[in-house]
Image (cartoon, rainbow, N blue to C red; front, side, top):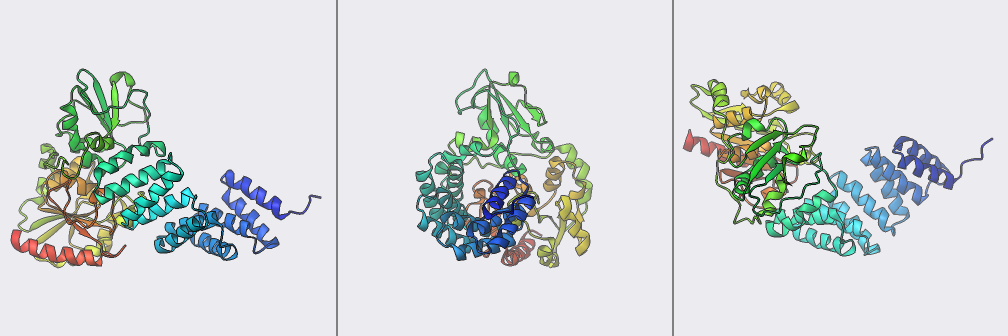
Length: 455
């Protein structure tokens, strides 16, 4: 007969199962431990972490709140509760617990980092930078703190300070799937050499930073540009590229190049500030053949032709903040003199049929971004949330209105209605987190006026 389970043995087994990512089994061990000692703080703390790993944030919050009630003076517990609250968007409560964690343990670098991240999400960038500085004083080699501070500076508009920490992203994330032994390009003349540039993360980043490739080419030798599938048809007219490559599962053969650099490193390499952004548009142009293929869809239309995008990639961690619903755009359809076209792709297109709005669906037939660029070229105005379409329309020099979360990605900065990256863009910002009503009222008023002037 086996010995009866003890509290210590159950906790030890829960730790083992957790380390093996068997979270359901770990939860069973901890629940059994709590039958032996219902108010055992360590068991409650660990159960909260297990619930989080299982995706049960509400259960994790309830469990950790009980643990804090029993043991309010443990810094790590307060920090972990803050993390659970952030995952649910409860930033104000999270800040209270992060501050409590630091009051209990001023050397808690993790709490300083998490507090900085939370303040940055709220647009409180100066306070966030102070927290990142604190975290880096405690742990100077923290790539997450370096990266977080760089994004806070960029959001603030201090690009020079922002680029200083931007390269730390390589220490904790690997967005680009391949690694190379050849040296990074440092921005110097590379005449007689071959330089590989490749995109890292989102499609919009490619459209935003592709503007630097002619500047790269001006510094010397041969430029190879590798991008994700679906992008090349929209980029072919870009200057500064000698050889186009489409990314595959295999890395580029290192015998083909001497130097390499991610596309997102180019603004820092060129020392870009708000005043020196290369912002002449258009720097992308649609493929004439693709334009000819889609032109019939816009023939004999006397109204203003307006493209709409209301949702981004649902797989993005930021998508919940940036995406709206087609229903939010419904008031725009009452404005006379406008005809609307959907540039939306993926599952969000299902909203078109559900709502029955007079909207011509184009995006469902797009094969690649070349088709998107061709369609945008035929429109008078694009209205979009923060997606790749916003960047593509801006790079094409198309009048574009971008609808933003209260605190958007760093490239849109804070409190501005214009973009130093794209002269033809106008920005509409939420006044309350997650609430698009004020944004849509402002867009409705602006579009009514726009139709009177340009219709």
